[in-house]
Image 1: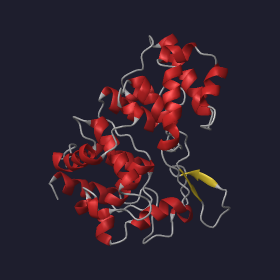
Image 2 (image 1 turned 90 degrees about the vertical axis):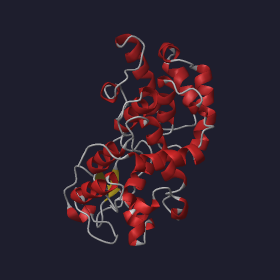
Image 3 (image 1 turned 30 degrees about the vertical axis):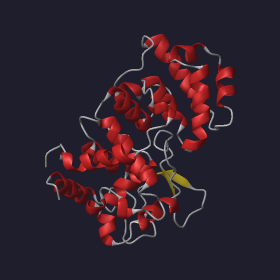
Image 4 (image 1 turned 180 degrees about the horizontal axis):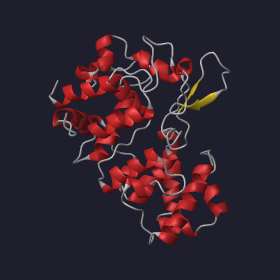
Length: 289
């Protein structure tokens, strides 16, 4: 199988995004690396509608990375008040100072270099690198994860598997738009409950839909206690142990206990389940199947 997916799949996703995706969000009007970074950090575990006024006030008060780096922590935390998860604000502030003091005041253009900054994990690095710099890397939040899991009929896939699939599917010419389209698709069409498969641009290729119960995969995510955007960055790609305390959690990649990774869905799921099946599915997609 070639490493490049055909333009038919990404073309459908991008065409849908062009016609139906949200384009009036404040961070979309001027997607500089700094503004993309701020918006993505704010959107971690926080709804878009909640973030919008905070984002507008933030960029008015800290219009550039340099201004943010010069601010004192008290001022930064005061601007963040109400968004919660204050470690995000502290990491933004600390990373801004690292960029100012060590990197010449400019955010690095690669996802690998971005991940070296305080508080920047795999998802945020991929989002900033693809949207602001055009690097062909995936950015998988909870919404994109759900889309891919249903597309390949994987109730609870390992994080590595989802990232590999997303990396193969990402459009090489428009990676930022593709990543945003996949997340938007999950947020508005491929919802956890009552997915609107009848208007989904990739429904014809969705294995979960073929099986007749795509919502079961969304239910598995809810039952496993997974959060949405930012869970990967905060190492909270977590799920509850079945048969154990409801507060006992661990990361999926570190857990080897089959009993902990077998949610109440159609069929057993074990660590790394379905990788070969997904690669076969990608081969079909690359042939236009």
